Length: 389
Image 1: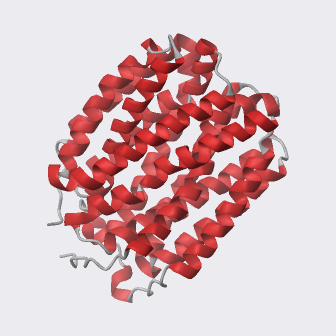
Image 2: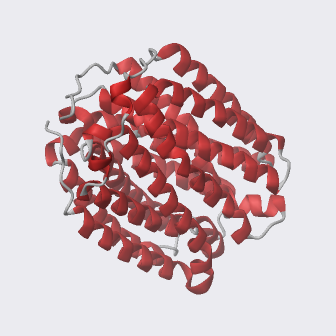
């Protein structure tokens, strides 16, 4: 029987973790609207430059190791290691050594996220009761929306003004160093766990609900990148948008996602985590089907993006506290495994997205994404929580 967590998490600790996650997420998110620009800058075709997305996602395969180490030695050391790797990866991109340099840099960014994300979620979960965990995770996940609104939007304007990406990565490297210092000085050290706590509860990890949640996450995130990676090329082809306009769209997305995360913070504990996931992704599927029809005007796209990404963020964030309650005795490891399968799903989606778009346009991407979401929803109906409020 897992020990019930006490509500020891302070507002200051939650704020520090959220800010650090925001900084790490900016480099990850800015890559998507940058793909067409980087293709021209590096003189490589779109399919090849999209492998930068795949490589940073595949680096998430290290996340189970991060989760096990966090369960054994505490979360804070892994979080610091992730931030240090982030500084190194963005620094390599800032030096601008060509396509190979960006590959190396985004391997570093991917490893940084794999090292930081699972321990940071475990850190928050272990210090908050399940009754209020939706609120805690919802607030922390504002970092995802904040990365688009406060990071991607101004950085894309900078790219448009300077016709260069080097300054973007110098800024990100500096912010990463600041976040590293913030976590180091601001979060109390996590004690090394006792030897009896190091053993992983493999039975809990192999339980049906745990496996179903992992499969669910892999499918919905495959669907997500299947239409996400193709969006910038699609908008350039259909509406001839600029880098600045792409940045503005990501600003709209950031506002919508912020509302989605706040929706989880205020509603998921009341509605129930699983019900929130089911309703959110069901609406998401309907909105994805409208994507191919929206490229008639930039305002239409902006309205659809606002609705789609707000609802989808609500659904994705609601799935995190649900995952945290599926196997409480191996929470850190399961959360890390979830990051791994999310990375695998997104990597596959990223690899398939451009070929699918080039084959049959955004219609094919949207339809396949919806089919994957529907299958995933069937799986999550069978998931059971094993942690009481």
